[in-house]
Length: 225
Length: 212
Image (cartoon, rainbow over all chains, first blue to last red; front, top):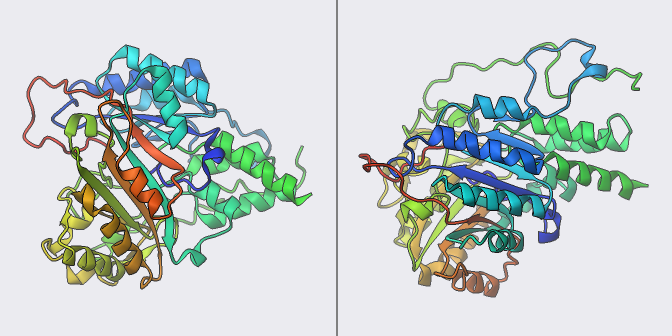
């Protein structure tokens, strides 16, 4: 699925959104690929990703299977990167999400030097990806453009909600839920960072960007004042 | 310190939700809506379409070709199979070839004319991707065709267009066509060309994506 391609926003709104992901093709480069995918994730850690994920098991923040009322005050909201890396045990897509271009560039340089043989893609603004490839001395092979949303767009929610909900391409962050988080932030019931972590937990591939979500929520709150 | 108690919004506090066992044809809804279950309705592994994400090793979209992903129902609106059928018929009338390893194509009773099996017409899914490949000269024609059909549908469409870059990493062919059609290109998925064939011998089904 095109799960990172159709994020809503203009190019500038992707200045803190760089999804770098690796995958293999069966019959071509899948032999011994699982440890390579794990290594890909491991190599991302020094560059301070805001999320890591594999498409089978989820991201660095996941839904809880059990909670008690005290979670309301004491819930751990730190991303658990180690669980993602150690949990990757099958052929899948491994993704690292960064909130600045320099980190994405440096990560891509490291991945190129490691020569894993996996297909590596960057999903961000066209210029952002171009610059990352240029800095890493990687020659772009193919490109898949998003032409945005067409048709009966009256069904779509407002821009803030759309920017948040489209960060999960599988639709696991519903528009109603994103709107609820915007409302909670505006009402002071949660901070933008807390609201961003709730939405991050729903993304089953780990490509949701909590840093961009926090910024969007902060902008929505500031605009209100 | 929050004094007011709001249950954590990402977990149902009374565990009231439980997945039900679904049977055909309703199981199609789950296959196209839940990324965490296998695509048992079609036999295609995962939900995925490969597009150009592994193009550096698969050559799925070659020089001079354009791959289209016409995703109906996304984001978050959903689509009925009868609407997917309308789009598929129009594309088939234009003489395009549907990508074989795609969940929608595998549900077609006759891929030559784009006919999807009748018993799922009244099923609604979160989104579904029709995937085709055409020569680059047909890019404008296909974009206009999709645009014409989507006006008749009560849903949204996310359109993706994929192509190869030149030997120097630049893409000079498709972007100008899309810009001439009025699209402002903001976001893309870029294959960095780092992939290479590493298997000692090609398997029986090369090109099948090993991912969801």
